[in-house]
Image (tube, rainbow, N blue to C red; front, side):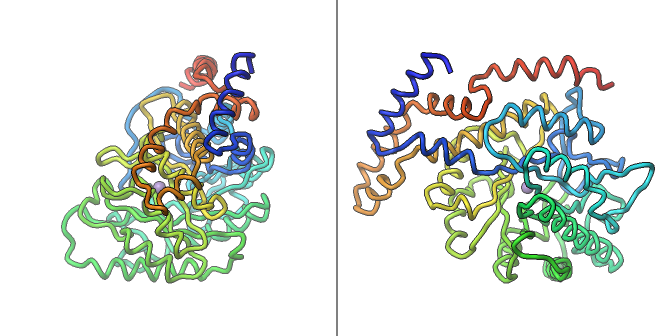
Length: 421
Ligand SMILES: [Mn+2]
């Protein structure tokens, strides 16, 4: 840190202290909060177990050069992105990222822990936990756009077996890393146009998830979740796993968490407001932090108002140990490593800002009915010198605070990414 930065931090410390905020405590606390980094930003959600297109109501757009084609490339790119981001990380892997060796292959219903050993080695070497996701898309056994809710029994059975295999793999991850594994169930099951039966698919979906969760697992090690979605590309009229479906499923199944992806709701709904609502009832919840833009749920996370508000709701409700935070976005139109880096850094910033907010003081004003003072203070604290605290946090984590981190990406692009042809 330069002398100027040190001075700036000392001034910032005093200014925050005037509001009762201890920025050094905030910096210290954030270092222990894990953010789960999704592996699928690096290769446009392609995976290693099939060669078909991305399906299931999601789509990557763009053709920026240099996408990762192999496990080695993807891991190197992940390393590059994470090296530019402060804070503690986990990695989030989809089942389609199974790594097969020597010409072997296992279909999704036959996946085993050994197919993920390289991910375990990667995580252990970096002292990280792993989160996991069964992959219910981009596969020939997706029949008419349906998996767990399919009317075809053989199709459902295949995907139930996939889910069960993923529970066993999640347990393996938790045992190997010593960190609980959040296992998220999301399917793109739905209909493009108006269905004749909305109950049937949802009853089958419910029974299929129940069948998956009948696989034995240790509830302290594996944290199964259900993620809802309002609609997907090609499934605009109906999705089986709607908000009410997923939330009620989690509420009525012991050990199952609701997972909210903030790109999966109607455009004027906000997940920040839903977090405290769920914290009234669930001991633990899970998040996919993303940025919805019109019909797309997966733009790169920014340091924007809703991202800050999501972080605030976690921090001020003292729920950092009750909310599993994961990122979920993919952009193929820009440098993929920069996309990762911007997204991770943005959520780190949001958490740090939430930790540097005089939450107790603001709450007191609300409870005393001093709503004018509350509005005034909420606006005034926006002027606090947050950048100096961010710089201090980055410095303590050994990463650059300013935008010069992009120089390293440019260098990596020239030396590594552009040679992938
Ligand atoms: Mn998601």
